[in-house]
Length: 209
Image: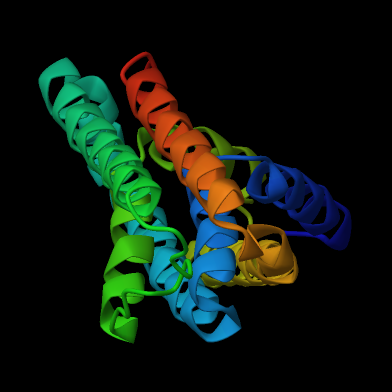
């Protein structure tokens, strides 16, 4: 892989990663809800999930998945179900907040492992990266050079961009915590986030291989 190809790959990966999606929105929510530390753990989990998908794309598993409508549909259903679950959880939290005069958004403490699992699951159950890796990697791999080093470099770049992007989005979310100092704003945010997660969950079902 020459430097020009690497730069193009970096640009394509960067703009794909920073585009709004389930992981980005969840990073923002976790930043508001629990702060930077939780977001960084979430970002690590998400990056490792993307690494797993990247390995699958090179090993041929993604090609098998894309060639099997039943398997691809199963992945879509799992991803959609998880996002809809997150949305329902937020709507339930909004109802609970409505029954109290004031509830801090981080009232319920979660272990850091739960954020790691959340980031990992968001990555591996989202069919969009599977399609992206399967379509992207072959375009940039140069058969005149060893494949393994190229694959490692591309994967590490993608993981780095993902980690930094989610961390930045989470930090921006953290800065918005003052907006949620009022109970009414908490309820509004939880309702909107719940609806958005459900909408993203349903939209995943329409992703085509």
